[in-house]
Image (cartoon, rainbow, N blue to C red):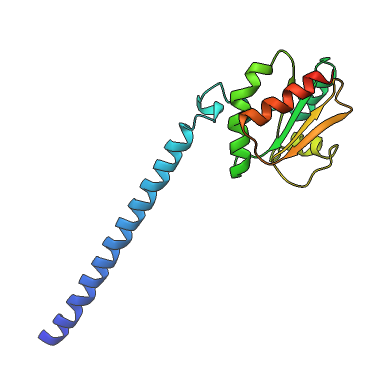
Amino acid sequence: MTVEKHGAEPAKATGGKTLAVILVVAIGFLALIALKVAADRTDPGDLSAGGSASSITAVHNDAVGDFEAAQTSGKPVYVLFHSLTCDPCIEISNVVDEVMPEYSDDVFFVNAITDDPSAQQLAADFSFQYIPTSFFLAPGGETVIDSYVGAMDATQMRGYLDALIAEQ
């Protein structure tokens, strides 16, 4: 009987150790999820969670409605098709957030986040394959003055916007 008892105890101990390891892993996993959720809620680009209001490119909006408003504004139009996840998109979004406030009186900005249905609908009216893609349009939004694929720095963006304003 002693042999049977010794044989049974390691099985219990192993089962107990296995359960303890599973619990530690599960608790660690839940802690990581909690940290991720907390980080997402404090993301400065996420306006729905009380983030920074200065991020105009993070706003999920009605791109079609914004473009229609741009067409009647009498201003030249800058349309940015981008995502909130690709690296070049994030780069250009940061530049737009920095530069566009300087041009808000002269250029109508249309933010088109390509993951949103309204931006996908608006994208059907434009010809492009990659994001981010910038379109610079004459007042009324019917004529494309210039376009640019990829990220650009603040100096480049100001050059495009200055040329767009000069086209009027």
